[in-house]
Length: 412
Image (tube, rainbow, N blue to C red; front, side):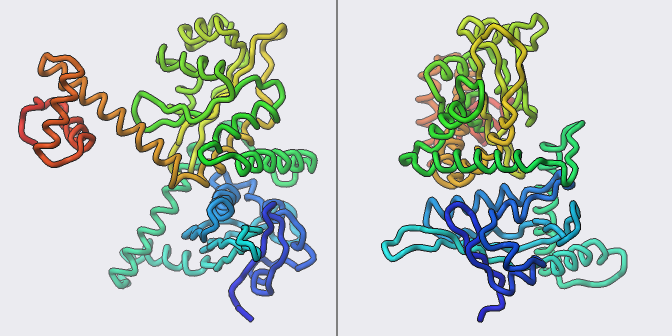
């Protein structure tokens, strides 16, 4: 019998089996866990604004289910509830690996969640790194370097999440979330994830947009837009041609809720676009002409970056000023998880391509301006120069952007 902690999960992420080692590690009983929804049994610590355990584990399990391959999560902080003590969580750091479980026909029917409790090691290494200089204790250079890298990576991610998620007035107290809200959240999660799973290859984001219109009250359209670091975004999916036109208005006018949400990393809620004091008069006028009455934009965030935005649109109705759907923010978090499941395939390629094109477009503009030629000629010049230097045209463009005050004909 293995001494490593294991959990068997079905495709709905309900617990179907646990071993004694897992029960010891989590201080729970078999009766408490068998049949329970994984993220109800082990929710995020509501008193910790930096908690990302549920989101990160969800994304990993989705990758396992969609690809049929194991996923190593590295080091993950995921505090666990203290038994029989409402609202109290115990600090834990884990090293989780998730693996697919397949039936005789090769179909993935669940996942094996294997964790190792590395809390003591993590704390000891952090103490060693923090105290080595002050106490005169000499630590092996390799050990300290690796520990410092691990701790830095973890703390940087935690700070980024705290900065993005902890908003003024957002106070969550343990035990105050009604069971009906948890059940609704669970149902919403399953609706989105199941829609994504049924989608054909490359259609995951479109399925999520359709689910937003179907499952969020008073939502007429949805758009998911990725940003690659430049000015021109990539529309990953929209629920309708109307949503596409409205979203495109922002990139014509250079202003609007999606751009603001991505730029700040905060949600942007505009229940009445017809207000005279709107922050985006050009967008409001153009969107109003298309019949938009309200817009609600949510950043799609990982622990360390904002990928893009989910924007919900509402057509103009008789009673303006109605706020966003109650579950919209939860839906945005689920959307991020679903997209993360594809981050190292189609979506990351979209982000990379968008960033490449943005950098190339700016470089073309610089060459055209400094050489007094058209943009078509400037692109041909860059391509010829890249061939001569045996580098990609994108790499050449980025080297030019790194020294924009230098003339393109100057040597690098």
